Image (cartoon, rainbow, N blue to C red; front, top):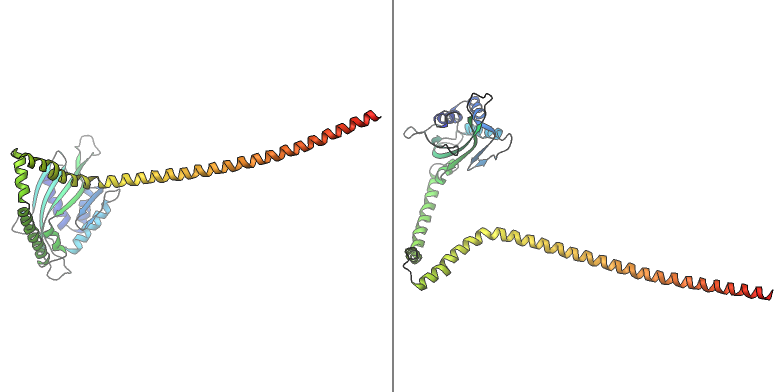
Length: 287
């Protein structure tokens, strides 16, 4: 792409409404070979050749809903481009109809985040073109449930959950209203000494402590596992040293015993030699 804001509308139309051949050519032309695709229901990751998975996902999209069309009453595509970071945001509205599900017709709206990257062209005179490095489809919960819970069933469940969560927020904000007032007074510097001690020593430290424990729990657990491994290594080393020491002591005792035996044998041999010499001398004298 030379102008992402201008060209993206045509790219989206070719991907969603073009023929299978046009769709495949568009993916090959605008996506990098290691591009990634992320959706609430699937993801490819990024690796050499991952673009092949994107081909398969878009083909299945066309098989499920071969006639996906934009709603006639609202703009089909809205664009916002962060040129400094090469990120293109595209808001897309479409009517998704699965042909093998009777009466299935779901108008959905999503925001697609496209991470672009520059890829030099083969000639020096041409400018660097932009290619899609990753595509991330962002749906609100009440939008993506329409894919598997049509006819308003998914919307009703999500709206009920939203209502319950909102009521819970209201009730809890009323129950903990004293903390809000105390925090506001602390921010304005109008708290008394007791309240200040409470805010600094109990409330704020408690909140910070919970957050710190949440963040460092994994690190502490890994550190504890590392210390346990070190202790186990030290224990095995001590056991090995103790075994070697006992082996050396046994060898020393065996060596002393052997030396004693050799000394006794040498003594006996020396005694016999002395007796023999003495007898020989006596015989010479007699002669």
